[in-house]
Length: 158
Image 1 (tube, helix red, strand yellow):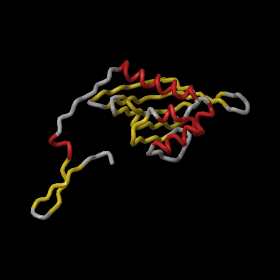
Image 2: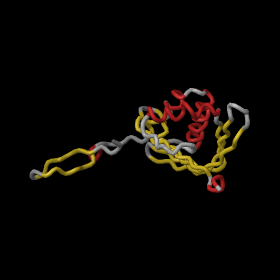
Image 3: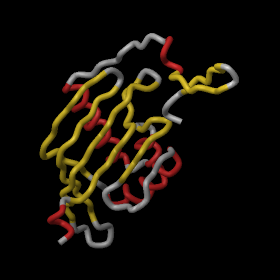
Image 4: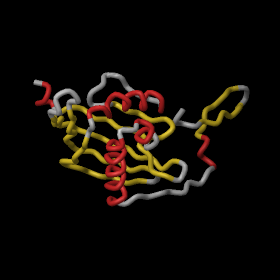
């Protein structure tokens, strides 16, 4: 569960209060260059063809809403399952536009990209133009992908 709650007893009634209320937070902040490096790391992981390498870039509780799948992936096993098949197309991502926002322990990158997919049988390359959003979270001393959503551009579906 993403939201940690502490339960307090008050006159026999349980009241939910954020567990972090008494905690102090140390912020890991990224730079725009760090966010760019995260995408390079992700694209490089694709090049390995190894679904475990790609899956290791995601948080413990990821959300993957992939371009070419109707199934939301919300745990490492299902993220890995997606990449087992997807990596066979030897994907290569190119950022076309990008907006970056950086906050305490999170960084967001949204925009458009082109993902080149190679047909294994014919060698033909299909360039899929899509919108994307990456949300990175600082987890266990490293920046990880917490949320990745990619959807084909509307004109691609007409």
